[in-house]
Image (cartoon, rainbow, N blue to C red; front, top):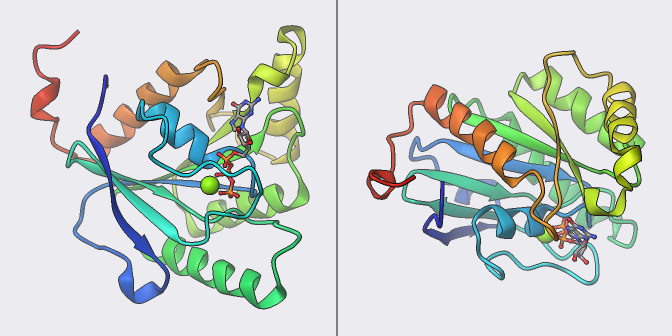
Length: 208
Ligand SMILES: Nc1nc2c(ncn2[C@@H]2O[C@H](COP(=O)(O)OP(=O)(O)OP(=O)(O)O)[C@@H](O)[C@H]2O)c(=O)[nH]1
Ligand SMILES: [Mg+2]
């Protein structure tokens, strides 16, 4: 999808504000600072749609971005932000679980793991949680530009191993800085949208 139209649809601070209009949702899950907002900006070709933080832990609400009026990309607050207070962490955790725990047909998750750092124990918990609630998800190894080419396959394999992923679970390498992996990620998203029954964007017709 080239140059999709995207806009911030809603910032959700509490469960009662979660939209539920039936459009498919692609949620970005991952550690604080892993590159969720940057991925969203790169994917949607918009430099500053979602705020990228110099200090981690800045995305404190669930942000719903509406893409081509067709589906939502959902930017979730990052977990594992050490400087957040316990009550703050509990509140975000509750909100994230309220969101992910809601039964939804058209939902898919990208679990972002830092490609250079590898999977942390919180990432392992997140993968296990997604498996338990049964949400379809793919793993994205972010900041892959920081990993020398010769080590990338090893880094992806290590992430696969430490998250105990099934062989068919996709793991995509991605860099918001260079754009590597953008095309593969869009392919994954389009496949999900086709299954979720999202109508094709009218604007897409007649384009290469
Ligand atoms: N080298 C490199 N740095 C990246 C990449 N993606 C993000 N970063 C940097 O990582 C930092 C965090 O990026 P964000 O996109 O704000 O991370 P986030 O996951 O949204 O963080 P929270 O909102 O705090 O949960 C920023 O300084 C980005 O510039 C990447 O692909 N390569
Ligand atoms: Mg963010």
